[in-house]
Amino acid sequence: MVSSASGDSGKSVMDTVEVFTCFRHTDSRGYLLKAVKKEYTDDRPFGEIYIVGAPKGEIRANHYHLVATEWFVILAGEAELTLADYENTEDRRVVPMGGENRVCVKIPPGVAHAIQNVGEEDMILMALADKPYDPNDTDTYALTLVS
Image (cartoon, rainbow, N blue to C red):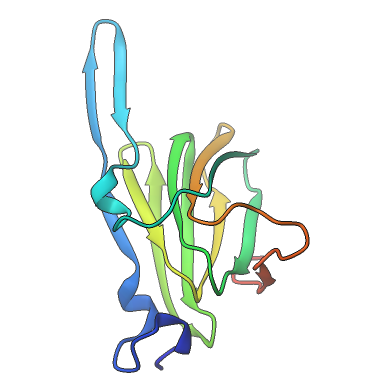
């Protein structure tokens, strides 16, 4: 199914999801993780960065946006990110994140998303959004993908 949120009538909104491998350098002092690089953002405007924590088994998000684009990176723990076209939730993709799966996932408008902590420790997610949160215009629409 083609979603109007993709802005391209010939392309499914799920075709606009991108997964980037994050560079990690480790040495005796610890590690450095390049989480979100400029080239991942297609020069989209900066809105805000926020951190989300979730204990083992918990699910966050279960919603979509029609305007905002977000980039997700797991800083600690392990998670499964479920993505779906908000107009056709059978068009799904599951992305393992955290642990050895050091990735940054670009979630464009119209892609519903839910993230579940599937590890033994607390999950810490860092998200970059191109639109700051506005409580008067949240651009957040509930849609349960994972329960």
